[in-house]
Image (cartoon, rainbow over all chains, first blue to last red):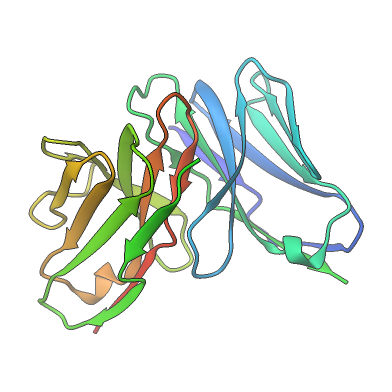
Length: 114
Length: 114
C-alpha cells in the first residue's frame, strides 16, 4: 500500500543544535516533495519544494535532501531557535497524479528548548 | 506566491445546520483545493475546486455533504451540510500558483459542531 511516514514522536532539541526530520514514503514515485511548517490552530506555511532530480535544496537555515533510491527526504534546521518550535509536515505529489493533489505525512512536532 | 484568506476563521454550530466557508486568493491561481484536518491528524484532501464546473471529490467525500463552488479564478466556497459533531475539524483552502508546483494554504476555519 502507499504510505508517507514521518517521525511520529516529538523531537526535542537544545537551542543552537541542528534538527533533522525524516520523511519516508513507499509505493510512490513523486515528482517533487514539499515541506511545510504548521503552528497550532493555523494553516500550513510553505517552506521548501525539492524535485526528484534535485539532491539538495537550501533556504537560509533550512536544508532539504531527497533520495529517490531510499525513498526518503530529510529536513534540517541548523542553529535552531525556540521560534522554530512547530509541527513540520512533508507532502508529496505522486507522478501518477496529474491533478497536483498533495498527500501529507502525519507531521513531526519539533520543540527547541532555550 | 499567493496570499489566501478564509472566512469565518472559526465557528460553533448546532447539529443539523450548514456552514459555508469562503476562500479568497489575492491572485489568479490554476487550482484550488479544500482539505480537512481533524484534531491531532494530518491534512486530508476533500476535493479539487474546478472553475466553472463541478468539483472533483476524493474517496469518502460526496457533493451532497460538501458542496463546493468556484465561480472565478480567485474565489471558492465549501459548505459543510447537515453537520454532526464528527465534522468538527479545521477546514483549509489551498491554491496552486500557475507555472509552479507550490501550494499555499489559507489560515483555516476551525469548526466545532455541538
